[in-house]
Amino acid sequence: MEYGNSQLPTPAALLDRCTAWLRRRTRRIGTLVAALALASGATLYGPAPEARAAVTLERVTDFGANPGALNMYVYRPTPLPANPAVVVALHGCTQNAQLYADNSGLTKFADQYGFLLVFAETTASNNLNKCFNWFQSADTQRGQGEAASIRQMVAKTGSAYGGDPTRTYVTGLSAGGGMTSALLATYPDVFRAGAVVAGLPYRCATDVLSAFTCMNPGVNRTPAAWAKSVKDAAPGHTGPWPRVAIWHGDRDATVVPKNADALRDQWTAVHGLRQTPDRTSTIGPDGTRREQHLAADGSVAVEVDRVPSVGHGTPVDPGSGTRQCGATGTAHFVASICSSYWITEFFGLQR
Image 1 (cartoon, one colour):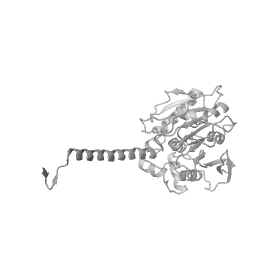
Image 2: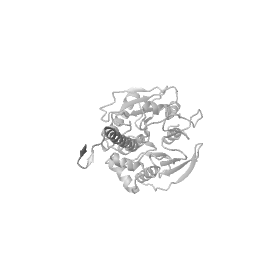
Image 3: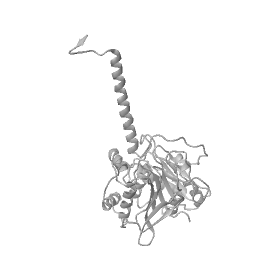
Image 4: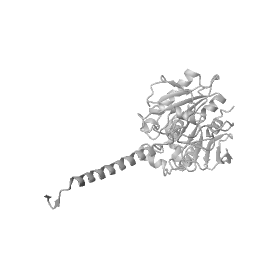
């Protein structure tokens, strides 16, 4: 039988065509999902975690209106001193509060130096890959979305646990690092200092597509343009501005090291400092290069820690030594240097 100038395909040929079409669609969907994960700062899968005792976290539900629909957990060392410092910790994509608490090493130093840890947590309802929405304008403006929810967590920590509002800090990995940048920009009156681990500058991206470009290959802007984004985020704030530590692996292909340079340019310009470091040194067991930019009083205003031979993740150094911390065996916790030790030192908490 003919149809026009060609024969109708046999049932077997039709089946082959349908199968080929489904395969093409499946590949496209897979590519889209992978791209969205990358634009949110994530790889989708990682090795299974090692079996270990979990850190005990307290769930807090009544911390405010919570416009960003986040979860709040607190790690409280025993004994808890009066007026403890507060460190907010933000997990990376595909992670959660418990995983970050168990592996980052922060709880070791909370126990040792007596500060409170607040682990903010996002969910798949907010972002398919459980990423903080560092690239969404609605979540990265003062008084809105996820940024406002985290601000409310800080207020709750003060009222319920006696946290010292003059000693409040924030750190985060990847998307959590991007949200750390947002919190430092939108609430410079709340956070005294922050540490961005494998993260991104504030307002590098404002949607998923620009997030993809920001992460890799990175975005070119002048230090003045980067600084303007920060200063526009908190109108009327004239200082002091938060001190900032930037941690980045030199083999990070997810959030390329160019973002560490952009963060440096952003925050040195905010502080009115030059982009060339005032002093350099090496730290840790792996020769991490530390570059420090000093304020007029000699304090470190901006610091860049470039970790050699490390890809995308939080550098940890498992062990019981003074400068060791964390655990490996879970995606995005990389054996190298205990970054949490040096971050708490930068915050001034080791006193």
